[in-house]
Every structure is written in C-alpha cells, then in structure tokens.
Length: 256
Image (cartoon, rainbow, N blue to C red; front, side, top):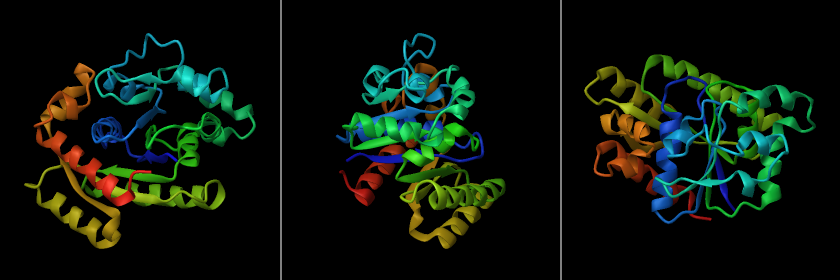
C-alpha cells in the first residue's frame, strides 16, 4: 500500500516544489517506487522533472475531471526516474469545474483508489493556497510534510497551516496528520535562523526532521536544466541533504 504525502505550505516560495522533486528523485534512487503528483497549475514540478508541460496530451486536470485514468496521465521523469502526473495551465480550470462535481474534494483520492496505486511513496506538490486543488491533495494524503524557512513570518504561516490540517482531519480525512517539518534554505551563519530552528525543535520535538537543507546554488540551478538537484549535482550540499532526508523518511516511516 502506497504511503501518500502532501508537501504543503500556504506561504509561497518556501521550497515546496524543490522538496517534492528532489525527495521523489532521492526515494527512487533509494529503490522506492515513487509517484510525484503536480497539483499546481504553474507546472513547476513537471518542468523540474524534465517534462515539457506545453507538450502533454493528458494532465492531472483530465484525471480530476474524469476524462482520463491514472495510466493515461502518468509520465516517467527522464531525469529523475520516478513517475509524474504532470500539470499545466489547464489545471486552473479544474477549480471552476470541480464546484459542480459530486465529492469534489475527493476526486484525487478516488482516482488513486480506483487505479490501485503500485508505488511505495506518492508525493503531492500543492499550490501555495488553500484551494480546491490543495483540498484534494489533503484529502488523498496520509500525512503532510511541511517545508519551511527558519524565519519569523514562516512561523506565523505555520500556525495557519496546522489549523487547516486539523480542520481537514476533523471533517474530511481522519487519517491526515503532520508527518514532519523540514527546514529548508537554511543558513547557519544567521543567528535568527538558528533561533527559529531551536524554537521549532523545542515546540514540535521529533516532528522536526533531523535533515536540514542548506541554501544551495546548485539546487537553484537544477530546474533550468529540467533535472532534480540530486541528479544534477549529487555531490552538492543541497543534493546530499535531500538524499539524507529520503533515508530519514524511509527509516522513520518504513518502506511499505
């Protein structure tokens, strides 16, 4: 049975897509069958996986509105080795179309259940807002991985996200829980970041992953080449951090 995780944060620019793409590649490299679902109409996870979002016959949009099955939508990342349910601007239309569809918040969950997903890990890259797309991701997931920067505003956004997760847990998905917090874009030279990191460990305890992803130029360069950072330059500090994170995920949660 696949373990399904949303990578979510209501704050933009915190490394959700970078985390999704690199964790998918690192898990696949570690021998885990991995599926990445791009739920963001911007399609950045799709492009970062080496897939041209402008040249797709089917996308996750077609899956959500019932026009295609998972097998028709799935594409293998040529640079990461994992499978992708890709997205492009068409997905923005799903927000409107889902309003009149029954079980609209469970369309992704129903599609995954119907297909009998043959993966060890499924990662869902959510848009930076509490939209119908994000809600579909949260309803389909077993848990949420929260990437965050160690900055003051990030702490404020975190409390909003945790409250959202609690509401979805209470009303729509009793399995949903916070799996853990991943510190990203971390600069140990900045006192504030060290302080916020210590606050997170104090408040959330073992919910904070031990792996810390540093601010890294090679990770930032990788998407322009259509590659995950862990395959673009596996010796870079950022790539090494995501590989350590994948090992920690497997160790903490176990392979199905």
